[in-house]
Length: 318
Image (tube, rainbow, N blue to C red):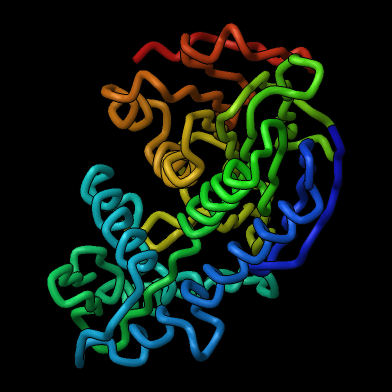
């Protein structure tokens, strides 16, 4: 068995991966090519992408889209419905307003109020019969960033399986996807960052063949003029960074697209919202950290979780 490790820049992030098999280098190149193919469909920053085509025709007409884009749009609408609007792929006007990369001051309430009417996942229109999709209002902007990486990571995993790779890890900008166990038969271990201590872990999850995704208020943020942390997980209901009482939330489940969506919606919903969202999802495990730096873990995740720091951890009863 051979091994190969590689990293690629794609989807405005890093795809880091390692595979074990007969032709791991070729397999990883093929996985990257698949992620790049999807970026060319999904990116709202590439003028020739299907998402850009949808945004250019917002409120005017539906545009032809590929089966991949149609599938992801249907998943996005379903996620918006299940979360009662917590997950919203039309949130881009708000994200542009906040500009977490460069800003040091919060936008005015008037500015937020002016773009909130453009944020409504129910205005995403899909017509499966004609293979077309669009947005219901002029000025709306579609951004698939909340689930595109998850979908792409799942597709990359399938490519590796098609290349007969039985053991691998994929990390697409924080979306960790695992193929099988490690070559020695032991489980992979995925670390969970401490939300307030740089370069420290709060714990690790042992996993095989599944996906682990974390959302946290420490990833992109600025401290505003009042000294308050303004982070990039924006609540589409208020137009402001989430104040759900959570600072970090990790999801472990079979599919990375599902983990991507749930890490955001459970973070926005807080502990009580998380219970509601997970009620019918026994295959999903969650580890959350509240703003008092207390840990909360679902019973399904307990056997595979190893604490690293002395965090006080309680059971999150669903």
